[in-house]
Image (tube, rainbow, N blue to C red; front, side, top):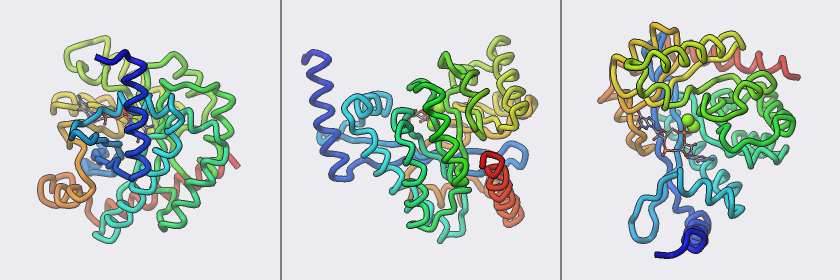
Length: 288
Ligand code: C2E
Ligand code: MG
Ligand code: MG
């Protein structure tokens, strides 16, 4: 077996090739709006199959991309792919919110919001339909993040604080950064029905989000008892295997239309979301 650093270097070389050849793919996981009971959006998640046909987990290759200077190129590929997918869905009558993950490392670049806004304009995707998820684990100094995140808001993007509750700086970030959404980490949601402590944390996180004027999303919902509990706790959105596993972009429309008709938004819901997107844009003006 190769020592860790040698195997990491090997993976980094393979990853570089995969990025150059646009071999990374995307899986999309649906997100349910709990008040209406309808699918409101998707989160784009990177997928990588190496040349031996093995799936490498994002939890393995994202940190390698961060350490080997590949993360910006990876983000670029992912965002372009996801925007093109959004356009294809729109042509099929689906206007879902699109979220993608951006490493906090990439947020050191204060021109990233302008760049991504340019990509949205190029693909004709309104930024009001796009949410940038920031993982708090890979923390940067809050002051550094403020500039970039504020620029995202000014451009009309939504901003989610991902994996809330797992890093040490969540509360500081919440207090000082212009997030629009708080995503409660799966580790609390997983045992919410069995653990009073997890329930307390989830409730506090939802109340905290609402107190700051943010929406709350629970990650990793795997059973209906948990989904019902989240509704009781007035959580706004839920994501998890119960609702849908990450799927290819091509599979999403048939899934929404055929496998999940109870969660399919109708025209009235679409009108509500368009209004919500406009509200998000108006709220963004508070940061001007
Ligand atoms: P995340 O952004 O918090 O994404 C949610 C992760 O939880 C995904 O794992 C998803 O497949 C998994 N998940 C969702 N629902 C359930 C459930 O009900 N049960 C269980 N057991 N798992 C569930 P995935 O795709 O392996 O991604 C892991 C992490 O890697 C992501 O966490 C995100 O932080 C990072 N990541 C993925 N794609 C990208 C990317 O394009 N760029 C960056 N910077 N990070 C990415
Ligand atoms: Mg995420
Ligand atoms: Mg997360």
